Image 1 (tube, rainbow, N blue to C red):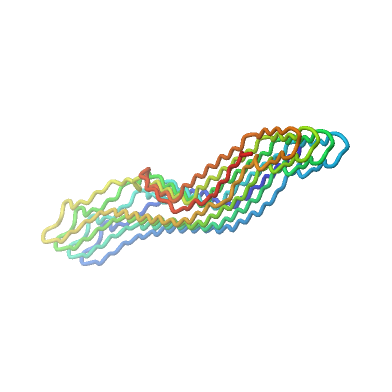
Image 2: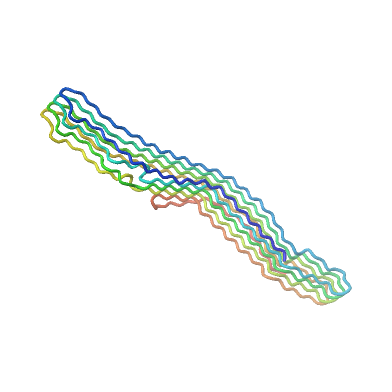
Amino acid sequence: MNKKVIAAAASAVASLAFSLTPALAGTASNDTTGYGSYNEAEVSTNNDVDIDQKNEANIVNNISVSSNTGGNTANKNTGEGSVTTGDASVTVSLSNTANSNTVSLDNCGACTGDVSASNTKTGADSKNIAEASVDNDIDVDQDNEANVFNSVSVSSNTGDNEANKNTGEGNVTTGDAEVVVSIANMVNENSVSISGGDGGSVSASNDTTGADSENYADASVETDVDIDQDNDANLCNDVDVEANTGDNEANKNTGEGSVDTGDAKVEVGIENNANSNSANVDACCDVELEAANEKTGADSKNKAEASADNDLDIDQDNEANVKNSGKISANTGDNETNKNTADDQHTGDADVDVEVSSSANENSVNGDEADGSNNNVDVDVNVNSSN
């Protein structure tokens, strides 16, 4: 038996799990201000999270394998000429995994604590400004580019034998020829998970304001989440396989000329998975809002504002070009038993099994999916078990 097993694996993976859980709070207040005074209190908090993940993978596999027990001769013998070959078996397995990005943020990256702005017990004819603001900016950018080329050429042969011109019988018996090729490509996966959280309270108030005073209280929380996921995949698989137990001769023997071939079997499996984007975002930072003017003075001007603004922008883009091509041949025929005193031929089975699966371009936002693919399959198959 001649048996060869080839296994290759290529992997290029970049992964980042990132967790940020700051609790931010802000308080701005003017309390017990004097007559005719001008008072301003301001608290501003900015929280920026910028994550940039980029991967590029270029993978090339060139594999050429030959397994042979055939090509034998037993000719021109004074007596019997006999050839018996063993099996020839080849197994090739390729696995390519490349480009994976993962981001995980707790509490929407930066949920706030309590934010408040207040003016309390302001003096007559005074002007009071209290402002408290929190600005959260989360920017996640994930980019993958994968170029994969697999070239596999395999030959398994137990045939091409001769038993000719013997004074006795001429006999050829071949073993089985089997080829198994497996290719798996898994490239370009982006995943972002942003969980929500308790954002505390946002309040603005003017309480017990003086006559003819001006009072302005503003409390605000703004959260901006921007997710950009891009994948570009180019996959090419070229597979040429031949399994042969035929092309044997048993001619011109003074006796019986016989050929008995083994089976020729080919199995080719190609699986392509490219370009997957997943974004799961919970409701960012659940907050309680409160704005109030209480016990305001005569002829006073009072304004209280409390606001929360959440902005979510998700952009997912995929481009995939997949080409699968090959020439597959399984042969047990093309045998000769000519000009013998008796002839006998028995050919084995010739089986070819080709499976190609391509899945490309999947986007998911909170479980809602949209699929797309761009791939091409071009495989020539030749099966011969004739005599």
